[in-house]
Length: 147
Image 1 (cartoon, rainbow, N blue to C red):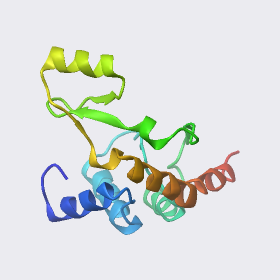
Image 2 (spheres, rainbow, N blue to C red):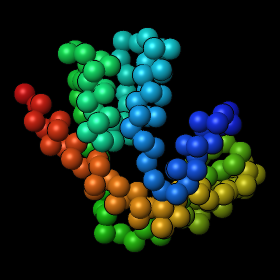
Image 3 (cartoon, one colour):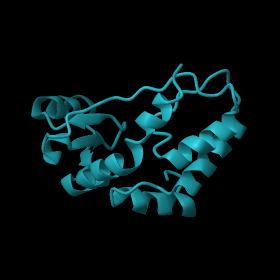
């Protein structure tokens, strides 16, 4: 997205609406990244998000692929407005809406603090609905594979 490629623009518009990028696009991006970087291990954050992505990941990595899955839980009963964060345009640091932290950051770094387009309450509500529909089933998917 930062490079401004056509694919990046398409992904940006999807994310701004609070939606998830299709499995086909995400799987392609992950597979290309795996091919470009060989490492002893990889930590994936936010992938896989769907059963289709999990199955594609298993196919990419083979039998010796997945070693550990971690699910972080959050309080979904909080109002989405409480989840809104700001980002420093200068350094990219995410700053919670706590005024003192935001003010200190702006004073110290003199960077403009902006709100990300995918952190508005409606986009957050959409992301939470997408999580319940598409991502929560992964708990059973990976739970059934635990030894």
